[in-house]
Image (tube, rainbow, N blue to C red; front, side):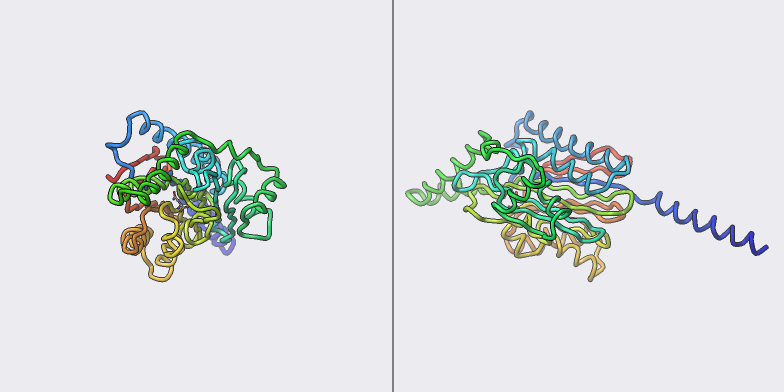
Length: 341
Ligand code: ASP
């Protein structure tokens, strides 16, 4: 009699354990930057190119999660696909600094242990997200910058490219236009210059990011960027600042941000979302909305975030006219969006 009830208990415990595991939902959400992205300024061809690249990144990352891979592997894959595309302001398509160079920032954080890695201002690492992951996994540090980060990346066997690898015609035209309009503004016509400068300023965001939750319920967030067009040498944005542009904690959420980095640093955006959930008991959606559409907007901070929690809930608020974004939830089809609904 005693033996039977013990056996029943064991079977029940196994049922609960496996049942719970089976319930763990996998999900992946990505962004390719926020900003003044309007349908009337977009050709059908370009729109299609963005949609296809976002879908490719989503499918590749999601396939890893479905195969039982980790959320770290999934976000790495999705981000590398976007870094290797000229369409986004990260890796290959990075924007130019005021000195017409490319200085790249990236970060990663794993929610299981709140481990993190980041690099800032590198000029020759083909895939900055890999360097951030190497800092997290293979060094005692969280952030490395400039020449030291580049040397570390090389020692780690990562692909090093000539800085000219990051030259793209579109981005170069963008910096020339911006520099010219700023000159105009200083030299002559304030009104016209202001409008033009504003227009190009608005086009500046284009960072990429990904957040995933895997079959183990572990969340990872990663972000990679060329920063902001026309930034001064040595300027570092929110992306590699843990808690500002990137954050992950299994107990709350994972967040990757895009927008005017200075405001995201001052608002500690990604951590603020997690903190509202943790200390105020807010839902993922309410917390992200509060930060992006109320707190950040009130300060004048343009941009948005992607975020997900352990239950596979996803939110993607932005306070600009558009944000390249997409997600796949368990067994679902990829959703990809560009403009406000
Ligand atoms: N947040 C990035 C930065 O300020 C720019 C972006 O999101 O595109 O460096």
